[in-house]
Length: 489
Image 1 (tube, rainbow, N blue to C red):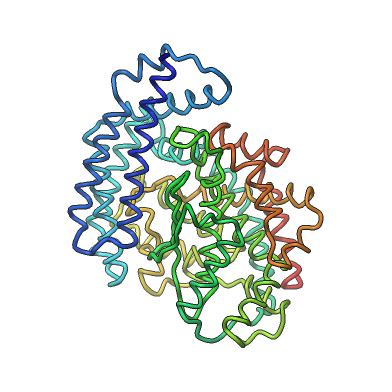
Image 2 (image 1 turned 90 degrees about the vertical axis):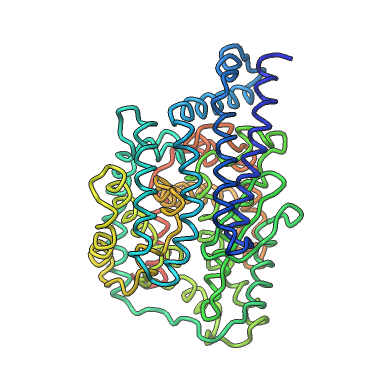
């Protein structure tokens, strides 16, 4: 066997073990017994130690030096392996293992403290997570910006400065749109009680409509919806509020967008470095386009209105137009995952500024709640009423996912570009979606973007798919047109 073949065989085993680690995380968030948290943290830490040892194995340097890629796919594999090897070599094994063990325990502490509205109880754990992530960022940055180094783990090539510049360009138009919309009369929302079993049945139907392959997946309930896995085992979670079925339905569609990406990657890439989504920003472009530009469109909500009437009967909405406006109702709520499209990116911008300051040492964990509450009041005009609606609402920081938040808005930006392109190429799309058929759109995304996995760099992946250089313009144009029409502004 050649050096390239030896390297890929070794890498396949590493990728398989990483999938096992991901499955342990899925289990912890869905069905793991409450009393198992301590043992699970030790298991995850041990597995992370094994993975770190493989990712820093002395043979990798030799294989990488000698490997000759047989084709463009092989070149992409080598690019990803070199990048991962260079990053992993900078992080001491003990630190990597401690981070894995700590964040595994931290997720349980966060969930418990969130349920009890106990910020003080969470702070010691969060303080330790931040200390460890600062250390990791410093090791990776090697004298550069530690936050940039953490961002690069989720969006290769992106920097905090580039994100800040993009957010600065977006904020004025978003704030102006919000002001116009909130100054207009709000559409009526839905009313009633919607049983969990009926919600879950319809959410499964929605997952099927959006192309989820049930032979390679399943749906479960979790505190914070997420998607997990790749290739032939891709699982999703959702959550249920009996007074707000949109929470369940659109969380499901969102996570199906992530899952469809992983399920849509060329099977030949399975258990290889390019056999997964190329970045979290590109990943979010799929989930957000499925959820918003497709799932909340006038055409698709017309179909969903009919299905909800069949399942739930009357719920206070007279017709499809009123339902479309209810689905897209703008309101300055507390929760990012429940935010409308106008407010959503403002939530992300706030978190970006806070977590960047935390990692840089400009903000201390003990001051985070006050900083969050002050910033939320300034940005949204509402005082945070309780911690679960404030700094305890998101699981990300307890998981150590610093640098992840800005990829949500980057995903929205990419989604704006992709849907602009696909609509130009599928002129009859609305007629199809009005019948509950989104396969033309999801098929376009699968062919143009999803099947390539990590073959190309993130931004290039989007550019190749949509045919033009991605920018925030299409997203902002879409938001202004959509909500200007709904609210008459």
